[in-house]
Length: 167
Image 1: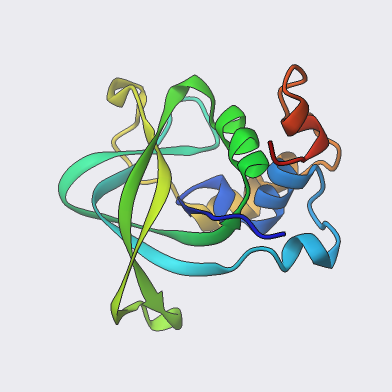
Image 2: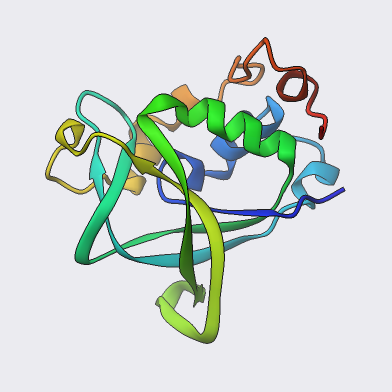
């Protein structure tokens, strides 16, 4: 069954293989799991994405006159949210935002398509580099390290996270 939560992902989780690895423990889960989610390009206004120092991943912080391209994902279950919170860790705070869905690859807004979602905002701006994080560079150079099937991203003390069940 599909979940009621929605998310806006702007970093490693934009790669479906990473998303599935975090939420289901495998980069290519059965079709039933894949069909639970939709993935749409989206834009978050008023934030800027930066590289986290000494890391493969980015963080976003509020910054006027900036915007972040990412992916709006639907169908997130309570169990998915537990796993995503654990994956993001204490460096990030889950926060509700409003994102604008985009129409295809041309990047033009779909009129009236603004959605609420949760995203993860970086807690320590001093830990960010001033340069933008590059998703395509991540896919090319680092993705393979982030999609190991069976990789333990779950909190072993949380039965919902381990079993993939909804509380």
